[in-house]
Length: 130
Image (cartoon, rainbow, N blue to C red; front, top):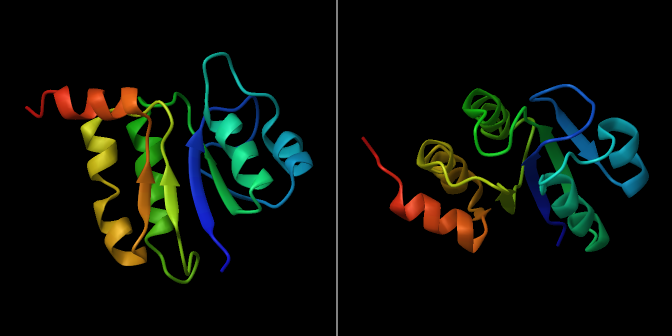
């Protein structure tokens, strides 16, 4: 089975909200450059590639805070003509309930998972919903 992971993260270069389909680590650095300090997106992208996963990477302005960037990427993932099977959505450094809740319809469509850290889960569970 071929697993596809969509990852959202900061990067040194590249277009924002653009779906980069990455197959090799060299492509990752060619298109997106180095990761900014405290960013986890590129780190998890490397891990995904090392485990031979198909990767779609969306560059965002700031991990966890650029809601519009995430929502534009989510709209892309909702289109079955562009993404036929999605296994997981990786949201490093995201504890924002608006962003995480927006993945619900994608997860239902693809029967996929959301990957977040324990710290981000805590932020999500304790954040104000007002």
